[in-house]
Amino acid sequence: MKPAINGILTIAITALVWHRCVSAQVEHPSTSKDGSMSAYASCYDKSTGRLVGSNKSVTSVLVSPGGLYRAYAESEAEASQSPNTANPECQNTSKLFVSGPNGDDFRPVLVVKPSPEALGNHIDLIDWSPDGNRLLLAQGVWQWNSDAGGIIVRIYDAESQALSRESLVDEAFSRYVGKNCAGVFYPVGFSSSGQVVVTAGPDFEVGEDKPVEDSCVQKKGFWLLDTLLPAVSQLPETYIVERYAKVLP
Image (cartoon, rainbow, N blue to C red; front, top):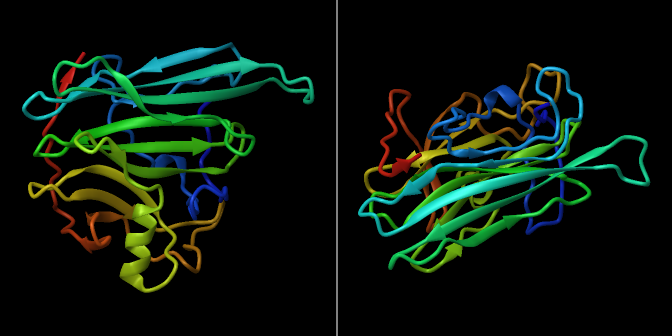
């Protein structure tokens, strides 16, 4: 059973507001057995929705241009029977591991733990920047068997060993429109100059065909994100996203 990620889930983590998003709009880099860049694990059978037990998913290794840094992600879904509920629960813990530049062992640089409001989570690896120092990823959070959840765009700087703040994209789009901005955002890569490329689309209430009032994007398209300001600018519909990293099986 894959999580539905429509609706709003508000949690006091920085000042982040997660977006309503239709599950079909969330695009993972790859879901194939070989070369998968999405660490997604479920306790449920996909066809029946029946709880089948704990499970683990590990991505392939993504190597930066020049080979200095390597990264992979894993997500472990643990099935448990809570004594306070009639139904069994599934909860995830997802981790991002990075090694380098001197052949160092992989070490965890991001650990996403379950919370009462969001038991499910995953990590998608997108790409390394052209200079080989920054890793772009998507951090997904949701509540199992619920419409609540969203995607957080994150950037890991391997040189400074720092992660971007969770509200980076929200701040950039809100600055662009001059007010609070709701939308469906997903990271897709880097430009040749090293800026982040995301897709942005309108934000809908569950079952509605009109975007919500504060939805600042009316049509899905490519946007360039300047992480320093932060600021955004729209890209042509024909924009082609380049890939810079190497995938190891």
